[in-house]
Image (tube, rainbow, N blue to C red):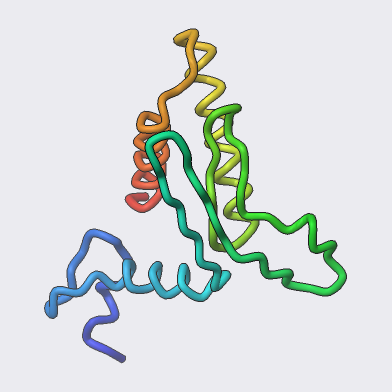
Length: 127
Protein backbone atom coordinates (compact mmCIF):
# COMPACT_ATOMS: atom_id res chain seq x y z
CA UNK A 1 0.00 0.00 0.00
CA UNK A 2 1.32 3.41 -0.95
CA UNK A 3 2.14 5.86 1.80
CA UNK A 4 0.29 8.51 -0.24
CA UNK A 5 -2.95 6.51 -0.27
CA UNK A 6 -4.71 8.71 2.27
CA UNK A 7 -4.14 11.89 0.30
CA UNK A 8 -6.42 11.06 -2.62
CA UNK A 9 -9.73 11.28 -0.76
CA UNK A 10 -10.09 15.07 -0.66
CA UNK A 11 -9.44 17.74 -3.24
CA UNK A 12 -7.93 20.22 -0.79
CA UNK A 13 -5.36 17.95 0.89
CA UNK A 14 -1.83 17.95 -0.51
CA UNK A 15 0.38 14.87 -0.36
CA UNK A 16 3.88 15.26 1.14
CA UNK A 17 5.18 15.64 -2.42
CA UNK A 18 2.84 18.59 -3.01
CA UNK A 19 0.43 16.73 -5.29
CA UNK A 20 -3.34 17.03 -5.46
CA UNK A 21 -4.37 13.54 -6.53
CA UNK A 22 -8.04 14.39 -7.04
CA UNK A 23 -7.05 17.07 -9.57
CA UNK A 24 -4.84 14.59 -11.41
CA UNK A 25 -7.71 12.08 -11.51
CA UNK A 26 -10.08 14.76 -12.82
CA UNK A 27 -7.69 15.85 -15.59
CA UNK A 28 -7.17 12.23 -16.64
CA UNK A 29 -10.92 11.57 -16.72
CA UNK A 30 -11.61 14.76 -18.68
CA UNK A 31 -8.97 14.01 -21.29
CA UNK A 32 -10.12 10.44 -21.87
CA UNK A 33 -13.88 10.98 -21.61
CA UNK A 34 -14.63 12.05 -25.16
CA UNK A 35 -11.38 12.93 -26.84
CA UNK A 36 -13.05 15.94 -28.48
CA UNK A 37 -11.40 19.24 -29.18
CA UNK A 38 -13.34 22.48 -29.10
CA UNK A 39 -12.16 25.91 -30.19
CA UNK A 40 -13.88 29.27 -29.88
CA UNK A 41 -12.76 32.58 -31.35
CA UNK A 42 -14.26 35.98 -30.67
CA UNK A 43 -14.02 38.95 -32.98
CA UNK A 44 -15.30 42.50 -32.62
CA UNK A 45 -18.71 41.66 -34.07
CA UNK A 46 -18.71 37.88 -34.41
CA UNK A 47 -17.85 34.59 -32.75
CA UNK A 48 -16.94 31.18 -34.14
CA UNK A 49 -17.22 27.86 -32.32
CA UNK A 50 -15.80 24.68 -33.82
CA UNK A 51 -15.75 21.14 -32.47
CA UNK A 52 -15.36 17.62 -33.70
CA UNK A 53 -18.28 15.29 -34.19
CA UNK A 54 -17.65 11.72 -33.13
CA UNK A 55 -20.53 9.29 -33.31
CA UNK A 56 -19.96 6.72 -30.53
CA UNK A 57 -22.10 3.98 -32.07
CA UNK A 58 -23.28 3.24 -35.58
CA UNK A 59 -26.84 2.84 -34.30
CA UNK A 60 -26.93 6.53 -33.35
CA UNK A 61 -28.13 9.00 -35.97
CA UNK A 62 -25.09 11.19 -36.74
CA UNK A 63 -27.12 14.40 -37.00
CA UNK A 64 -28.34 13.92 -33.40
CA UNK A 65 -24.81 14.09 -31.95
CA UNK A 66 -23.86 17.63 -30.98
CA UNK A 67 -21.81 19.30 -28.28
CA UNK A 68 -22.98 22.83 -29.13
CA UNK A 69 -26.06 23.96 -27.21
CA UNK A 70 -28.24 27.08 -26.92
CA UNK A 71 -28.63 28.33 -23.36
CA UNK A 72 -30.58 31.49 -24.19
CA UNK A 73 -31.33 33.28 -27.42
CA UNK A 74 -27.95 35.04 -27.21
CA UNK A 75 -25.81 32.61 -25.17
CA UNK A 76 -24.51 29.29 -26.38
CA UNK A 77 -22.11 26.74 -24.96
CA UNK A 78 -19.69 24.20 -26.34
CA UNK A 79 -19.42 21.27 -23.92
CA UNK A 80 -16.94 18.44 -24.31
CA UNK A 81 -16.74 15.36 -22.16
CA UNK A 82 -19.28 12.71 -21.40
CA UNK A 83 -22.52 13.62 -23.15
CA UNK A 84 -24.70 12.94 -20.08
CA UNK A 85 -22.59 15.39 -18.05
CA UNK A 86 -22.85 17.92 -20.88
CA UNK A 87 -26.64 17.68 -20.93
CA UNK A 88 -26.79 18.04 -17.15
CA UNK A 89 -24.58 21.14 -17.20
CA UNK A 90 -26.57 22.72 -20.05
CA UNK A 91 -29.82 22.04 -18.22
CA UNK A 92 -28.44 23.80 -15.13
CA UNK A 93 -27.20 26.71 -17.26
CA UNK A 94 -30.67 27.13 -18.76
CA UNK A 95 -32.24 27.03 -15.30
CA UNK A 96 -29.84 29.65 -13.91
CA UNK A 97 -30.40 31.92 -16.94
CA UNK A 98 -34.20 31.65 -16.71
CA UNK A 99 -34.17 32.19 -12.95
CA UNK A 100 -32.01 35.31 -13.31
CA UNK A 101 -34.29 36.76 -15.98
CA UNK A 102 -37.38 36.02 -13.87
CA UNK A 103 -35.88 37.68 -10.77
CA UNK A 104 -34.28 40.73 -12.36
CA UNK A 105 -36.27 41.29 -15.56
CA UNK A 106 -33.38 41.23 -18.04
CA UNK A 107 -31.17 38.58 -19.63
CA UNK A 108 -28.25 37.25 -17.63
CA UNK A 109 -24.84 38.60 -18.69
CA UNK A 110 -22.53 35.78 -19.87
CA UNK A 111 -19.91 36.64 -17.25
CA UNK A 112 -22.47 36.31 -14.45
CA UNK A 113 -23.65 32.97 -15.81
CA UNK A 114 -20.07 31.69 -16.07
CA UNK A 115 -19.34 32.82 -12.50
CA UNK A 116 -22.50 31.16 -11.22
CA UNK A 117 -21.64 27.84 -12.88
CA UNK A 118 -18.06 28.02 -11.61
CA UNK A 119 -19.38 28.54 -8.07
CA UNK A 120 -21.71 25.55 -8.43
CA UNK A 121 -18.90 23.37 -9.75
CA UNK A 122 -16.64 24.45 -6.88
CA UNK A 123 -19.26 23.51 -4.30
CA UNK A 124 -19.42 20.02 -5.84
CA UNK A 125 -15.65 19.58 -5.50
CA UNK A 126 -15.67 20.53 -1.83
CA UNK A 127 -18.36 18.09 -0.69
